[in-house]
Length: 122
Image (cartoon, rainbow, N blue to C red; front, top):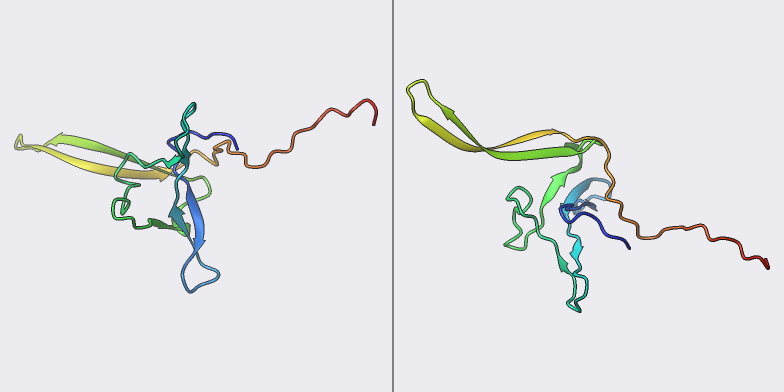
């Protein structure tokens, strides 16, 4: 197995309970492996509140399959600030959703076929 960027939080397809056709995407976790230590790998936790929903209570987080297009979904969260006509300042935390940049690749390889040079005696 090779490594992937630590900020990749996978969503794994799982069957909806009681239905053998409908699929939802469940938040998963990649293991964090520290080089040079004998400590067991620990799951990488999301840093934002968008993906950490229910994590502290140990609850799974699901996304409906039809909500994520093939090109992916990009979520951008930011504080916004504006001034009203009367001069009052308003600040809010907003989230924007847009289409992703196309199919991405985490470069994760579990099994890899590698051409091996033929031995001279074969």
